Length: 321
Image 1 (cartoon, rainbow, N blue to C red):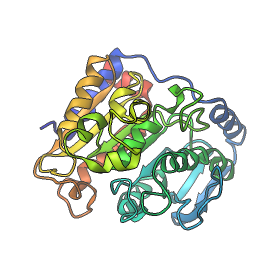
Image 2 (cartoon, helix red, strand yellow):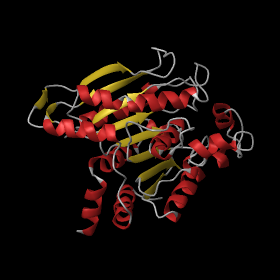
Image 3 (tube, rainbow, N blue to C red):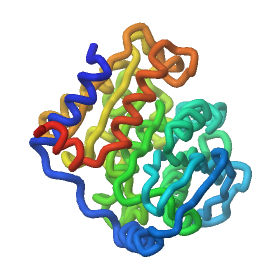
């Protein structure tokens, strides 16, 4: 088991020997410039703000599912001064579970001074599946640019996405969409999170699909031999970006998504010279890692905060000092 401090230390140490992330997309960069111009204007808020926002989608949207909850912290904030965390819930890409799974994390992270965007999307059984689920997540992420124009106090140039279970796969995919080809779902992102935290994620989708995980086969419309292009496009272990810092958290008692998924993924990240850390939560199962009554809950919050609160350069400087 890698303890919290060791996981964060590994992330910092890895940053010291790897190149930083690529420059943000032009839209994100332009928003950052605009935020800099408005830097003298402070946003002051007595209480955290929570509001539901709809995001536009390609084709016809479903107002009941194409939305996100935006959380903004209390206090006084200059433009571009608040780190953003995007949350993507899991539930096997199916409709039984929704964004409420991540609400505890959202509330506790905003209380720590972060902006949080907790997204909902269409899933298998409610109009989703391939490719709609992936289009929705891409559209929800790209809407961050418009949200930032309304709320310039949060930054979007070097930010974090956190996902649980199926949402962890989507989070890892979100961090590497910039490398997708023109014919791939989710390409040309307007907003690019540049560091990722995976909670119990199926990060080696071919391995999981061939070891009994029928849910992956359902959402992608076939197994690795039937739809190999889809696996190549969205499977985290086949799309590692060595410059994107990642932390994988996995419960040792997880029988739904085997810890081997995270272990294999982080081993591949290290082999590629990438920036990554693994935290195995002793005794935790697939659901308990997102339960606020778990003994690991506060530690996982710390991992998210540490990964979000520092830029890659800050982590490099901290390690060198």
